[in-house]
Amino acid sequence: MPEVKKEVRTYKVRYVCDRCGIGDMEATGVVPKGYPGTYPHSCNHCGAFQTFDRQYPEIRLE
Ligand SMILES: [Zn+2]
Image 1 (tube, rainbow, N blue to C red):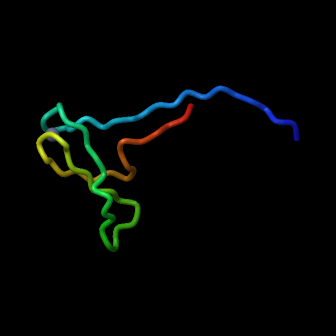
Image 2: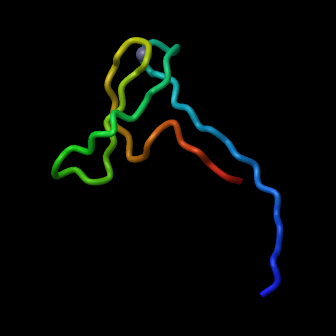
């Protein structure tokens, strides 16, 4: 197979806090036991907690 080059764009996907609308939700890095695939996050501005099925900030290639 020959090498094929393709340009991709890199996006950093943030999730803005639903509560204060200012801070970003950041993964706490702790996966609760018994709940694989869930990622607790906390806001870096107001400290609100929210759980997602993916981690933010996320690096996405398109
Ligand atoms: Zn917040």
